[in-house]
Length: 628
Image: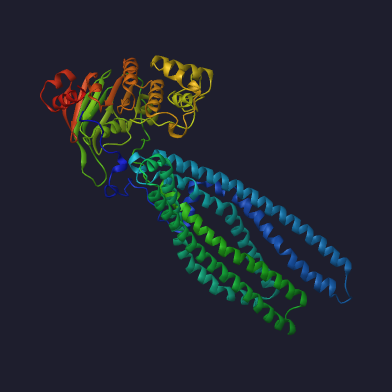
């Protein structure tokens, strides 16, 4: 048989055939820091929900921090060094008032933490959901421009970096900024000269931080990219573990993963060196400022410009000032890490959706499906055409087999008919309506694709088959509701489907029947068994048009015959398009479409084409010779 496989999947499309115009997922967004923050908040508005009340509470918390310097100053100048001698009562009163103010400030700080935490979690949940949903909205071609593990890392680890900053850094940055403002205001009251000394001393550090943040940002951007690449390499190797062992390439795979891990370690180390240098400069300058204030403050005190209590209070205020400044350097570094992660998530969300639903999309009634392709052309971005003006009219209630050599364009036709991709020219119509004008819900109700390798989710045979139920059996829920896979009605519907497909004996032979666990990706079952479950799932969906990428190619001959008989009952009154790798499928079809190098070369019943002396006749003769 000459037609044993189809053209390469889109994962095999060369990288230079993909561009950034809606076909490629960018590694990171090109937005600046503040633009990234604005875009992030726009995507997750919950982050700023109730922000004014939070700011008010944070202001009270920051004001509470200056209670201690005020209490110390008053205790020294009015209580201990009073003209009439130490006043124990005044000292006690000041201590009680200070304690009360600190308790109130602590409560405000706790409320700020709770409010910011809740807002951050709500916003980040929205970010994850939007990113995850958008990944599913992207076409297969777009998804395959990035490794699955790296793609998943954007919705997991990259969002985690944002989460760490918003929940911790955001709180600290907010409180620290307010604390700096309040401390500066009170320092001005005590001594404008010393306040100027403090600010002038910190100006060099502010300049260094501003300059250094560019490098920190680049370093963290590289870290996020390397982490994504590492997760992609690891996940790929885990999924392909059987192939790795079978071909004895464990060492080579280990070196590849080791290289990804080392690249990640190197990027992380470089970023942390920059962070340590920035933070250390803040600590050094803070200590120098404190020493300068002691010297200048002592001189001012000797000259009568400051009382002893004011000088001690000012030193406390300097600590309140320098602490947040040092903290701010670390927070700004975490901000760069968060922005790097945020940019990668935003890059996903801002990736244009090639196969999109129109705002005015229409809904069709169920019924026999009439499929028409009108001068359909398709090419991958920046690549040559793979379909050249394909025109087909596939009547309803017809079993159609599409055959052709490897790379002829068969699977491309299937993906266009199911609207996993859109044609670059021409139109694919369902009952006279362009698929681009149909609502996705209506299209997915009417058209179901069964790929060559059925994908199963981790769960039971029952769970996986029940995915085909549009509405849980016996339920009045909306079609979009979560199917109740374990309900008695659903179990009965699944059992009935396997009986009608002639697969009840196969289910009975499973260890736990319908409750047999299939494992991750269905790996507890054989390839043929996985396909049986996928076919049962499609049967339960009861589509108007069933598109099969040779769904029986992975099963043994006996099972193939059994499934073929079951599919006969399923296709009664329905349309079927089968991407046929076995010409036995074409023999059993009502209509055969022969695709050759992107053109429809022949169309007609098997009996007519087999004796016409064309491409199909040669293919069929070769197949017959091989099967004798």
